[in-house]
Length: 506
Image (cartoon, rainbow, N blue to C red):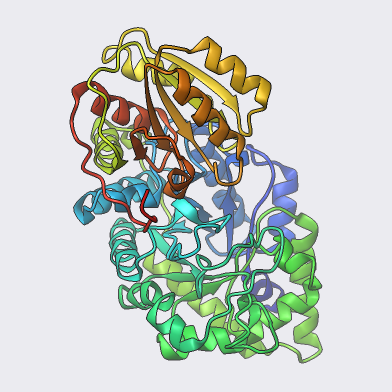
């Protein structure tokens, strides 16, 4: 078997651009990757991305490399690679807050059907991390919650729905990224628990995923020193990967998280990463952004075979597993007419409305001509006009205003004067980190006619709000979720959502 080909098949690669061109052709010829991963930077609209993916497949076929596995992270807000022209997908925590696995199943069907339409056959979801650390900077609302069994149930529901629609699912981030307070994009987190604790907590959702025949598992860039005392990241830790393969019995594809993340790139050389990972049991090396890194990984594998550091038997084993994935989840595309259908948007809205959770207090009896205050955070798209359009028939005199993520004393004073004696819906996001938001709540609370505070991300923010105002969780900042909350306020209906995480009493 051609070593150059089977070495390249260990790679899942990202790329720049929205149109296929000569540099992409050169990349395919040189790297011969098993697949590509799409990010928002590659997506303009459904037609464009559909054409881009087809061009990649056509060129791969023309140069004689196997059909590409096409992947993306379409988890749910805030990790969405496809937005314009696609149905909005609320966060996983939002889904769990509905308390309805039936709605979760329907939403996962929407996700997978729309991915399948444009030609994505591997979704890097669901997130199976249990958000046990309220200070976790990277998981939060991406998780189904802090109860291992709830996370396992919703994770299994997503996996079944995805794979029934012909889209492979990826359970992540093994052995669990929810119990750390360091972001592996920037440093190497340490999960300081023993194997028995893992078995009774972090591993429960992954065990259920394996039982549901999940197609792939993604490893976390975290160290678990009580399992591997060398402090090697799970990314290429044989003791940790052996737990997945031997104890959980997983036989599918094992992939890394992006190798550009600083937990890896700041501590290890690409040549060491490639060889160690493959020998530890990893099948796919994910390189999302760096073309130079992708070439280094490929060269390291080829050289590793020549020097006897990697066996050709191991590479053939990986190749056959990837071929098995292609047979199980064959690539195709379908009519774009199925995107963002009335049925799909109805499911999305049903989830966001049912998820709205009243955490403290009672809703005000009147909420006319409200002001919605939203923090400016990079993950949000501008939603002012969308919110107005969504709720114009529902509420007259609606006003939407953005404030800085960490508002200054000057801005707080300005906003409190501008919106004195108004009904105000104040959205928080990461307020436990950006404390200016909490000062804004206090000041607005002094001057508002009625103040309602809503956690747009993790509900832990609400525990830091000391004033006695109605406190709700919506888990997602988007016109859909804000409309759902405003409907509750104007219709005076009691929200049905339930908290997927435990909060101290307020």
